[in-house]
Image (cartoon, rainbow, N blue to C red; front, side):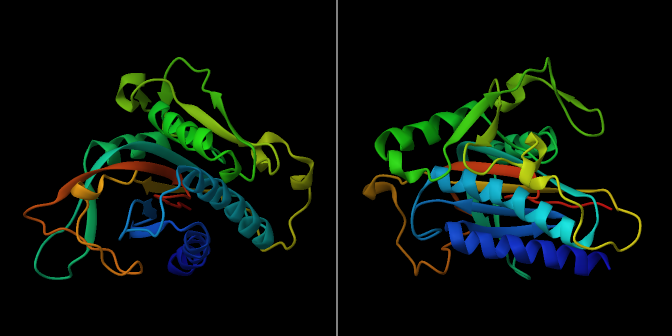
Amino acid sequence: EVVQFMGELFGLFDGLSDIYGVYKVETIGDAYIAGMADKPLTKEYSPINVLIFGLEMVRKTDEWARHLGVEVTCRVGVHYGECTGGVVGNQMQRYHLFGDTLTVMDTLEATSEQGRVQVSGACKTEVERQLLESPDADPEGVHFIERDVDKLRTSKGEEHDWDEVGGITYLVASKTKPLRCTGAPEYHQPPLTSSGPPAAAPARASILSRRPEPASAQTTPAPASTPAPAPASSPAPSPALAAAAAAAATATTTT
């Protein structure tokens, strides 16, 4: 039942990753990790697409849960920074990401409000840079709301200082497609079906997006559909926009 539960939800995230050009790195337990970078990891670099991908993960989780008549929510965290990618080990080889960016991303996801996307100040700055250059890149009127709390806290009550995530963080909001948690009237509807008592389940996700490097710093391109992981012995660091959430870039669900 749990495998089917995760398979359905992560399958929806896979579809979103194709729509927004975000590369799915891996899933770890109930965590879904994806990223965006310059070629060959993804075809294009668009920080705003990463944010909208996170928002859509929250919406898709709400839609899926409502259809089943259960209570499932999603948190997302997004960060911009440097990370290292490479293949580890000789058997069952997989491409992994490493570095402080992943740690910050995980903290942003864990301390986000349920049903919201939380981003770092570095992520906010990078998205605003893109929108200054390309105002039409944002179809939703995305804007940022500064967190008004003394400390960041997880759902388990664990506290994190602001300096652990690079300073003040922000919740992402959309002018044209508000999230359910904001009280949008289109969400005030009964479940489509009822399948017994509701099961509370937060989902989390993490997304990475990297700014293109100068041509001299880029690695040899590979087909867009196939990432070119660096050997584990010599991984190359790269800037990355990371998003984590209970159902986003790094997505996790619990029952």
